[in-house]
Image 1 (cartoon, one colour):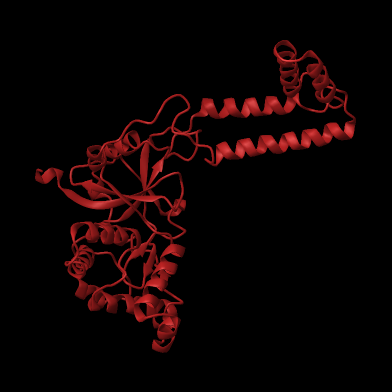
Image 2: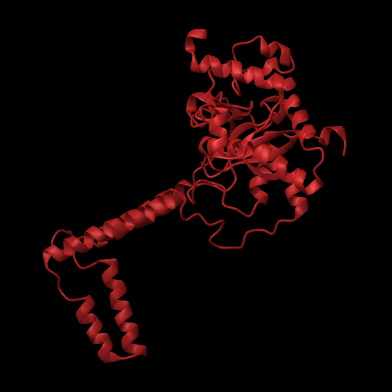
Length: 360
């Protein structure tokens, strides 16, 4: 592999506009944002928000939300990551490595299928109109539901039993009172709203209505940088990190005696503007860990990121290849659950500032 093709960093891409689907991809040094489109062209999944959007985005925005600092020095995206004030549009021809910190979040820009959207709106509204109660409708007797019932009765009469068909006509097509018509229409509105909601919010979001998804090989996954990891939500991190610490100490009672439970009540803090993933990109490589120890803010630095990677590798050096891959996937999901004493001091100083604002 040439130097230009070497792995450079990880990025996370939010799929389906869902903060539980921030998937991690490896990016090479020479890759542009346009190259990331191949992810959506390759994976046999519907990654767009709903059927009303194209499967492949037209661009990306970088989330520069500072994020949430964890007790071990990781940075999670938090609940503000997709807010407009933190989003920066990037050119599709920009190199990814020039616009992001390692581990930063990208949000695809989805292009709406306007023709399909308005066609579905029109079809559902037409269906509603035709099923208006006859005493209200300007054109009574044109209900699509009625025509469907007539068609069913016709087919039953022709291919099954004329007597049963006549019975169905009496049950399905008999005149109804105004109250019953209104009740029927109410449930019809409810049905249409459920259909619309399922389509609009992606509950029903197939890859394609006309064909099968493409087959994907291991080589395809390597080419697009697939890692199988996805960033944990705040809630997932807090629960799993707490369980990890308690289990490591030997159980709940042991953790209580150690005085750890009170510390575990706050395992993340919200970073401020200029910190975390909002650290200016032009400071890359300028701050060392020693510099961070003297700061009252938590800046991202390449020195910090490399130190975390080095510590992780040292801690897991005895694992075989499969076990190491599993541990590293967890590291990508949650960030570190253990860190070096130096990074721990930096983190504790920032936590202390958040807990005691008077220290600012």
